[in-house]
Image 1 (cartoon, rainbow, N blue to C red):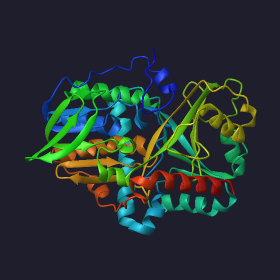
Image 2: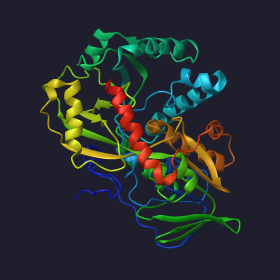
Image 3: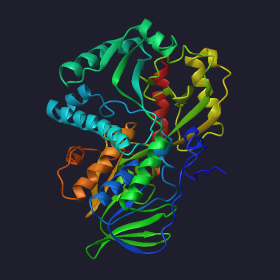
Image 4: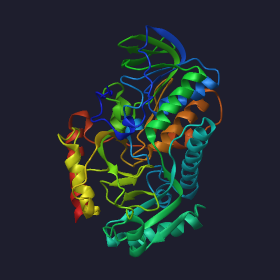
Length: 428
């Protein structure tokens, strides 16, 4: 029987195609460690792997199963750079800092691919990404972005697509133009998650599922984590809960907002070779973004919703099918074989949140839709920091991430109003 996550709805196509997803035990009782990690997604597992490989005694816990959050059920797209375009970041941060953040993201891209290759993890990498515009008024910005990335940021892999090329590469005339990126691609996220977890265990990290952190505090020179299975006493700790922080730690919760996102998988599109013939992944220019791609075996994986709340829809499939129909009318009655969702952690400026939230406790999250690359790399960078090595993590620690408005009482209401407004604006 397939595991149904208590924190994320639906059984994903990813879970259905990884029959050897291993289960890990709950923590058998109280213990001590050099480093404790809360959160078993990409960030926490990469930190655990690199710390253990570096000789540290590390304990990692997750309230559910590893990958039940965004790491195991996301859209699988790498993207390029940070969530905000590098040329946009330059206007706020200046060229040097914007370049450094872009270079960090490129390092993250290489790190994930090198990690998978080194450990022979078949992550089903497929190259190519198309970023497409749903409004004609965005064309000047898209053309300028291609030029700026080549001339100012040393990234020559972008090319502008006119309407004819965009339609040909998508197999749809729904969008006006786009950008093709040959320097990135997409993966099977659960296969990376499973392979990463195995490597962390082999390196010597102590990994425990279904062990919920209840409280974190600094006490007597040590970090104390109370769980439903006992207490962890450590010299330092990392919180890697991202959108699933809940009420565990208030500083992270005030800066990282969870939003719900949903994905549907179709059968193999054997009768529609015109759809994404080059195999690229796609994201569009809506604020409430639509993102889709074909799996390596040829099915459409389509993500997005018209409006967001903190809750789950009763029928994910109908929302997804409606949006597929808008872009691909020939698929109006396509079956949805799997439909699932989860939470994405966002911040106000769409930049990662990285902060020491109490002495000896660092929290990292808020990747805002670019977490496949950045979360893996940030886990590695945290381990470097804990092991006394030079690290690019300071680039993120220096970012000024403001708290989200509304406090815990009104934040979900403001989120609903804001994203509903942006969804309406996307349609106008």
